[in-house]
Image 1 (cartoon, one colour):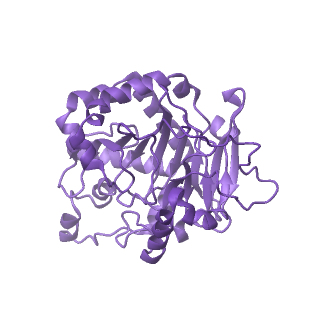
Image 2 (tube, one colour):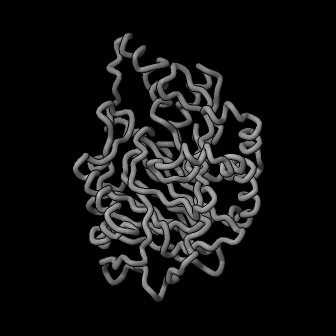
Image 3 (cartoon, helix red, strand yellow):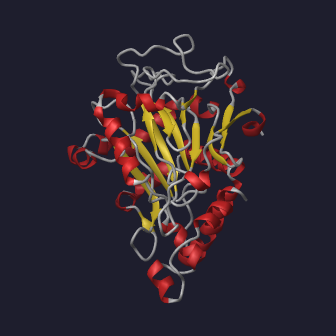
Length: 371
């Protein structure tokens, strides 16, 4: 009820999710923007410190700050709709239960990732990652090029640590919150995820370990790093649906200025969105190019009635105020969709039995986002 009753609705009048999103020729998954556009974005992003090369473009994006209230219960969520009225993004209010249990969240992350964060070998493997040099610890089932789904390599090699994390009460509660809000805001996506899960259970005897989602990525940083802050990318291996981003912050000796730091940019949607700790963001990450940006140097061009970030309503950045931000990402890969859609373990088997091996993107979009 609160997700709808206390929600601001923003319309991206020049953006259509179905027409402007990027997707693969097979129709099963997303894609990055066309090469020329992608190369130009990446070039400008990396051409100057703090992505200043992109600022002239980003100043024309619609900024969506978050209004803090004295009472957290009075804060509002935000629903983003495209020019056809389809919801393409949801930003929740700060969730009091998660904020109040920051210590428990920090502890459970430490128990899961602590050993790897101290490992020079693991750190070397993570250097130069597309989304950053941090540790992306992925749990749950995936199929990728295998015939049958199986647990990720790290999960299968560390079952006791992984299961302790999954069964921790704080994680169980987080999964329930994610499931509830995703079902409310994206009912078509949730219904399809549940239908697919039933097929996998009947065929392989497995269930999603994270409510609607087969995978959870815990993003944590190594010693000497200070936050999770991702460069331009699309999660193109994911299926036509949504991912859920949860923002946490570590408490000990940390301060993070979310009014200026690490906003998320949805490139095709033309929005830059503040994501305070303890909020959730839901959007089709496979279809939309996105990245984090500090907005303190961007002079957004907006109409007078938009509460854009200013010196008066934002904290000025200071050295050390970028510390402590981390994230969880709940997601489903495209290969976990192919079996339920074709009735076969692999695309090769489906083709051998007369299936085209492709999916109709328009039908997938209508089924997921307009149901």
